[in-house]
View 1 (cartoon, rainbow, N blue to C red):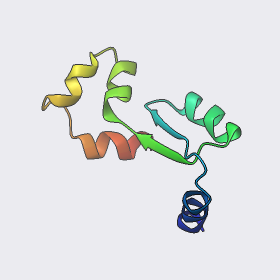
View 2: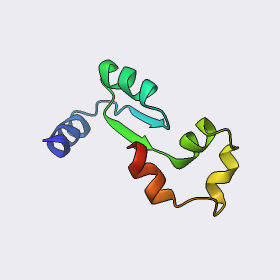
View 3: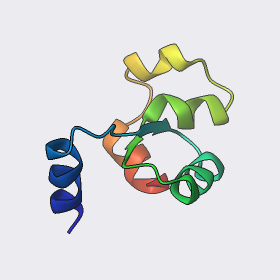
Length: 71
């Protein structure tokens, strides 16, 4: 269903709205606003933990585990 909705919007040449997030609060509001895609990023979570976004490029944590934990 999700894929079909995206394909329909693309065929209609409508805009797709995406959100890159690291927090649940911004995601909740974006979903209410009708966002089409949600990108869960490890750097957003690292910022919440008080670490620079640049840490997302460094081997300080397992990115997959971090994203799956808050995703």
